[in-house]
Each structure stands twice: as structure tokens, then as C-alpha cells.
Length: 65
Image 1 (cartoon, rainbow, N blue to C red):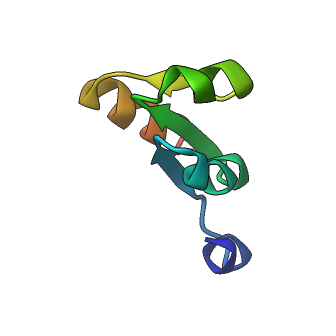
Image 2: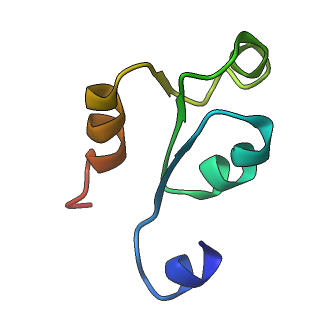
């Protein structure tokens, strides 16, 4: 992901577990997808979505920026 960012790409990421958090926090658009309550509780600033429609909208928002 860092190589893509260095090359000038905008990066979006989604995941549902602790091992995804670094990727989600590094991306310009990061989301939790159906995360367990423990992750939601400890990472309240990361948006969470619960549908594929929400996932698509969250990952593609503001692509022109």
C-alpha cells in the first residue's frame, strides 16, 4: 500500500479484524466492514459499514479529490 501511495495513487481499504487496522488507518479512505464489537469499542474513529452498498459508497466517496 505504501508503494502505491508513493506512486501517487489514492488508497482505500476495508477490513474486519485487528490485523487490518494498520492498513485501514494508513489508507486515505479506511472502513471497518462488519467488525466485532471489541474493535468498534477500541477504534471509535474508524467508520464502520454493514452492507456491501455501504462498503462501496465508503470506499469510493470523494474519488475526485
